[in-house]
Image (cartoon, rainbow, N blue to C red; front, top):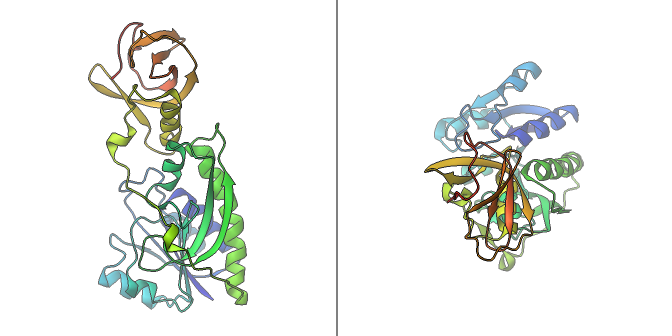
Amino acid sequence: MRTLFIGNMEFSGRALELLVNEKAEMAGVVTKRSPEFNADYLDLEPFCLRRGIPCLTVEDINARGSLENISALRPDLIFCIGWSGLLKAELLNIPKLGVVGFHPAALPRNRGRHPLIWTLVLGLDKTASTFFKMDQGADSGDILSQIEIPVAYEDTARTLYDKIGNVALGQLKELFHAFESGNVRPVPQDHRKATFWRKRGRDDGKIDFRMSSRAIYDLVRALTRPYVGAHAVYDGKNVKIWKAEERKISMPDAEPGKVIGIEGSAPLVKCWDGAVLLKEHEFTTIPKIGEYLA
């Protein structure tokens, strides 16, 4: 069973390595050389060179040349894990066993962009790791494997990324061997239950201290490493905030955004219903008590 792999993110590398270790007959790998907007970008070409796997680097995977090169590798099955953008029908129809996609959410709910980030921003207490057979829609194909994953208050983008990844690797191993044995059981999605998450923009990362302490905490943990970081505005400049802590403080006469304390180098900032301690940040000058963050 000739297997092609498409991906260009950190988790893509772990998934590709698992397939190789499971003795998959690798027809080739498709990746990108430039990171675009993916903070967890990973170039898979060095791994392919070490393992002697044919590697195609593309800018547009649906371009005529890309399709011809992929078709020439004669894949029976394609895994597409960690790739932004839809695959057109001509590509989906190349492998006889289809194309398997991955989405870290509980499909059919929460299709679309940035599922891990939105899960944390919205303070959800559970998500899922889902593999599905790709079609021309966005995350709308038949489900091949899905496992629910709890989300703890302490989880950050890093810990949830790793938690989902560890579960997904176990699923991938089982799914790969299910394809080998012809024991795959697709389950159609109930499209009536589908919901969609939009693409995140830069303004979505701005901390508005009129928000609740929980909302600010969730925003910061959602965008922390390996992602781009949330930001506050101080002295007219954007300042990255990597870690925050909720504080239940009653100061009804203090306006949101006011610095009400300093703990070491961490500003304590009033928000709507309490305060947040900005524990890890990139302030070059620590704001003073009484100053304001926008």
